[in-house]
Each structure stands twice: as structure tokens, then as C-alpha cells.
Amino acid sequence: MFIECGRLPRQKILVMKRVFTSPDSAETGLLKNMLEKAGIRCMETNEQMAQTIPTAEFQAELWVENEADYPAAVALLEHWKHPTAAKGTDWACPRCGEQLGSQFTKCWKCGTRRDSAA
Image 1 (cartoon, rainbow, N blue to C red):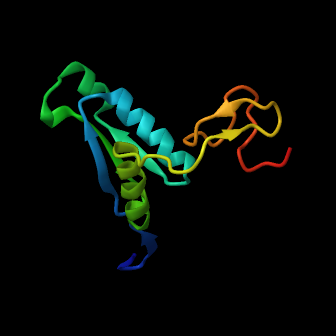
Image 2 (image 1 turned 180 degrees about the vertical axis):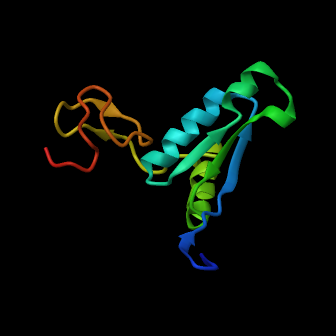
């Protein structure tokens, strides 16, 4: 969104949206890292106040910096809050032969991804 400000150059205005609130600032930090890994820029607020004053007004908050990223951020957080059970069959690692459950996407023993060739 751009706004004309008299003779000043056009400036971009960011519209941030809050996506998460928690009394646990560590949880908020974890989710911030998860969103940033997905390419969604965000920022934390009140993370230190939440540790000092544990009331609703001072809970740690996570804000998405770009309003267009809000739907994707909400979807990621919902998946984190309510993970779906993995469907499929157990599998054997094509590299080391380790037997793994269907919920795993890579081998815990050698790190080989499930969909990689031997």
C-alpha cells in the first residue's frame, strides 16, 4: 500500500498482523523460527516482559510483518498446534536398512530422506 504525503516521496506502509500470543516466550521464539524458516518475516514483542510479568497484558506476541503472509502463517501455526497423523506404511531406509515408522520423512540413524534413491 502506498500513500502520497505532500511532496515527500511515496513510502511503503507495512501492515503487521498478530498471529500468536503465549505466556511462554520460548514457545513464541520457537514459532518465530519456524515461520522464518518458511520464508515468513515476523517479529516478537513482549518476550522479556512475559518472563517478568506473567499476565495477559504482557504475554509474548508474534506478529507477521507482511499482511500478505498472514494466511500462510496461520496455516503453519494451525498445523503445529494440531498435527495430522501421518498416513502410510512403515519403510526401510534405502541406505542403511533401518526400519522406520510411516510418520518419519528421513532416517533417524543416517539422515537419508525417505524419497531418496539408494
